[in-house]
Amino acid sequence: MINDLWYKNAVVYCLSVETFMDSNGDGIGDFQGLQRRLDYLAGLGVTAIWLMPFQASPGRDDGYDVSDYYNVDPRYGTLGDFVEFTHGAKQRGIRVLIDLVVNHTSDEHPWFKEARADKTSKYRDWYVWSRTKPKNASEGMVFPGVQKSTWTRDTHSGEYYFHRFYDFQPDLNTANPLVQAEILKIMGFWIQLGVSGFRMDAVPFVIAEKGADVKKPKEYFDMLRAFREFLQWRKGDSIILAEANVVPRENMQYFGHDGERLQMMFNFHVNQSLFYALASADTRPLARAMRDTEKLPRTGQWGVFLRNHDELDLGRLSKNEREAVFSAFGPDEDMQLYDRGIRRRLAPMLGGDIRRLKLAYSLMYSLPGTPVLRYGDEIGMGDDLSLPERNCARTPMQWSNEPQGGFTKGQKPVLPLISQGPYGYENVNVAFQRRDSDSMLNWTERMIRMRKEAPEIGWGTCTVIDCQDPGVLIMRYEWRENVVVIIHNFHDKPVEISFSLNNKGNPGMLIDILDGHDSQATGTYEHHIVLEPYGFRWYRAGGLDYLLKRSEV
Ligand code: GLC
Ligand code: CA
Image (cartoon, protein in one colour):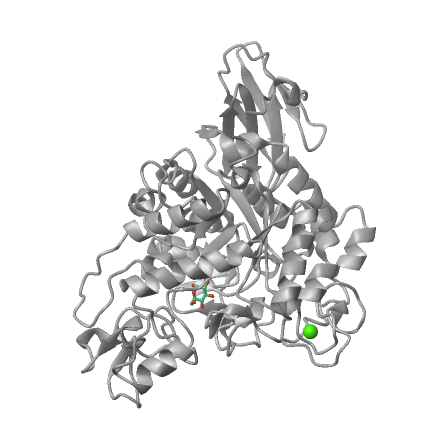
């Protein structure tokens, strides 16, 4: 079981081929470049790579507008290069997940071109049409402020087509059985080329009822079961990791009560209250979010993240909480996006304070679930707010202090490198940090090792232990008689805390698995600990030799 459910104790690294490494000097990252960096990723210790969209695309939404699901965009290489890459990853024990963007296609996809050119085309019903402009056309936009409507008139056929996202992303009619069959075919294709599963884009919209008269869309959850069953027939250990920012009471609908639907979902709920905790040193909403998302089927798992390629969406916080996060981490208008979020990278959000960054990442590695880090996080990369919308946090990877950060030998990178200033590639890059034993990079490598060696976090049950101070979060994990205790201080000042674990049969010794700060309980099983400002501890109860106790089945 432990080895079969590989995603329970994985460390996922998300990257975009386009901005990771350019091998041929045209300024665009490619699969051959990525291939050359596989040993870097293996050295970091990640066990899975999530590739953002790389299929053929006009690239108007960073590849989330696909025009051919069965091909690599020629700018990134060929299908041959892709298979070399998945093979190379496999040789190093790294799995590959890829984005599956099937809520919509690009308006340049041949299906849409045919559908709009000819009302009798077999592809007409692959999209969602209305003869007249629906009343709710100006509701439900995902990109308010940039996107004007969810229905746009198609000049060819004179009818309106539905698009949940930008107008160049017509929604697929996912209720159409032929579309569903095509989605399976797409999954089957990439599975055959060596991937271990999919990060499925915009899942609530994929399964939502779509149409001009739909007021309160029903959700077709059974579709998820069909996806999962198909995947398991084709390749038993492949998974779907859903992007679904939904309220906790809906979670089990996505996982399925017996785990018959999706294996993983990103925990957007915990993500938002985690940022509130970082902003306010109040961990109570975070503890609540953890409780609200505690229930999972046995095979289910959360994806835990800090920042991703999109804006930090704060839409589910209360107004006061949201304002606290905006004022701490994104006070200026150009740091904010779509009336609900912050578009910056984490390092500048936290003012480059290494103590706070480590606190945040230590949390990401230790909250219930599987951590998903984003390329560049391991060196503390910054953002470029002069770039539009979410592009500010999608700049090329900073490998060295060579021109263009070592990302390309060419003159014109696909997006400008961050240069000059505290986050410029001249200062922040892999080559420098590799030589510095105190660097963020080497610290990250160590944290990833710790996370993998603490399977209690991925597998066990988590309880938040009370310590009277809302600025301190104590998590106690238990799995197969092993206990791991993880403590984070959100205050900018040192704190002294007391807590009790009440471990049956536990000698009361907590061994620090990161540093040398062991803690011996008093006769009444109380621990007294002093934490530095933004300090944290990872403890194992009993002794270090947990591996002896751990059984492998
Ligand atoms: C998801 C992606 C986002 C993209 C959108 C439309 O939200 O994360 O980047 O723009 O879907 O595909
Ligand atoms: Ca290239």
